[in-house]
Image (cartoon, rainbow, N blue to C red; front, top):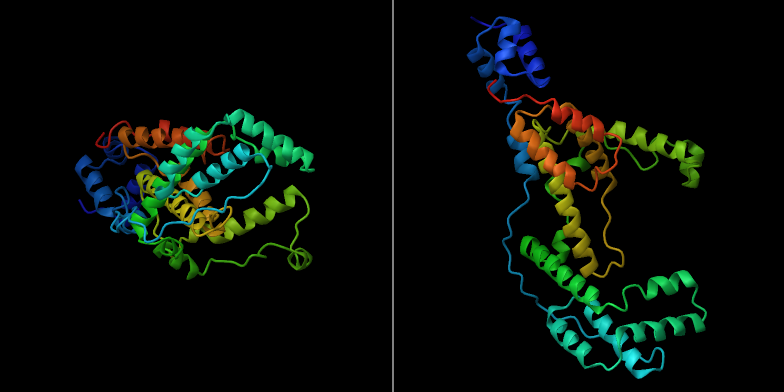
Amino acid sequence: MRLTPEQKAEIIRLKRRGLGYGRIAGELGIKTTTVRAVCKRSGLFDDNPAHVALFTIPQPQYSTELATVKPLPPQEVVTGHKQTDAYLWVLEVIKLNEPAHLAAAEEALQKLTIKPKEAEKRYRDWLVLNGTDLLNVAFGTMFMDNPQHFLNRARSNIDSARQVRAHYGSYDAAMEPVAAELLIEQSALLVGDDFGMTEEEASSGAISGADRYFEVEDARKAAHDGFCDVLPDPHTLSDVVREFEYWDWLYKMRHTASKELGWQYGADQRQEISDREDWLDGKLVTLRPRHQREAVDVLKWLLQSERHEGREELDDILLNLVGGAADPDS
């Protein structure tokens, strides 16, 4: 039996709704094997190969050895109390995230006679005495009585920096645009920074009121439409999760690299990528799970995703996962 284009389209539509092969065959009066063949040949229910190629996290391929060692910070008189100033200096050494200095800094902590709590109090009192406002005093002494916090963070940062070097070879290379970003730059859907603004708003660079701000945001996101003219569509929920994980990995790589390059606060996520991720959220709602295994895997990922915690789309995403087909061949 030769199927008409309309029949094939209806099979695809029903499959996208989450119906199994057997149920589609029953509703349309077509053999189950025919329904399965149409779905398989469409390629719409398997991971999109182009998407996989673009958004798979690459394997590390470079040496992680450091070419240079960061110099030690100068020892300065801060409070005038020698042990307190020595403690402050050791913390600065730890914050360098320099593997060559970390062990020596940890050893130096053990040799100091001042206790961390005393050093914190002396430094806090000195800040207040010198006119520092209370908010900056609080931030300036945060975790100061717990040197282990700084040691743990340094080890984590050192490991993250090592991962950047392993994947990119250098911190500068990590800041270069990836293939997906180069495609976005070629998109006909890409709009300017002042898109959706009035002439007055664009001229002043300011938008008045939260409602108006979100109106402009929504207009830009709708115009960008996930840059679907240049980026491959995810065919499956597994594709969607893969892309989210790729962008998250890339952001972490760049944040670490930029900090190592001296950026005080690290690199932010590009606005275009944030808009693409908002578009992907819609795919989490509309793409049905192929089977229970995929639904469970996506649910496990979702429960660990900080991005989706408390988002308004969460209920719709969960309903989509719960309503998935019981079995890929049912």
